[in-house]
Image (cartoon, rainbow, N blue to C red):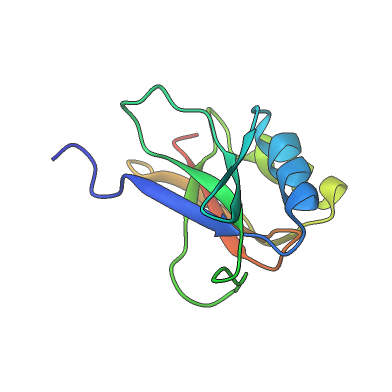
Length: 122
């Protein structure tokens, strides 16, 4: 087993708003599809690494409770955090060092009301 996690889904109330938010803060393309009555915005993947999607459907409800997903903050997660509030999200934990070996994290509330986090080594 290479990764304990192999997929994640971020619930959205307003699908287009959520897709715009994540495209802006992460600087990635999001492929929009519909599967089984659920709108999905698929994050890029090479098929070998963990990826996920923004989802809007009957059984998906944004929340600040429950599982917390840490997104890859690239070389320096501050670059992502700097885009959160400009795109109508809220930073709730600024860039904070975990340890010299484990790097840094930060947390935010996205446009949909989900509590999310970013991680980077620098």
